[in-house]
Image (cartoon, rainbow, N blue to C red; front, side, top):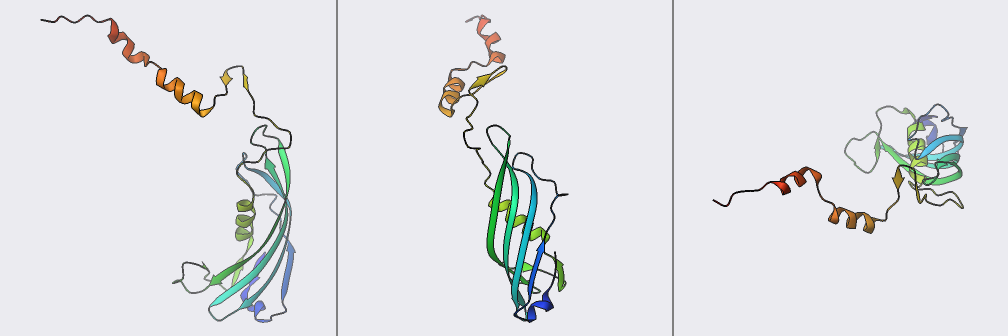
Length: 163
């Protein structure tokens, strides 16, 4: 979605578009994909700043942390983004050109709204299986305390002379 900051000098200007993220690759343990994204942008252009009000409705396919199954999510975001030609303000997004791509910012907003840990309704943590077992943190710490390092066990059989 291309933004031309000069269009927002007209206070009634509205940019509404469907954005396609189907070719975007994601972390496969967090998000599998984004199927539909509709964005509505209004804004105001001040001399040094462009403030955009962004409304995003998106269908996201998340991943269950327990079963790795798909979880469909509806993400709705209503926020504002501030852009500036000035390089001196840390709280705004610096742009060099009055025409710029808004897609990376939209994608960042969507990804930040999806929780890192998703659990599908009715999913349970696996208990144990072939080649693995599930321990609580306390059980793991107890095992580590009682564990003997086999690399040093050979030294237990050495007899030293006291002379």
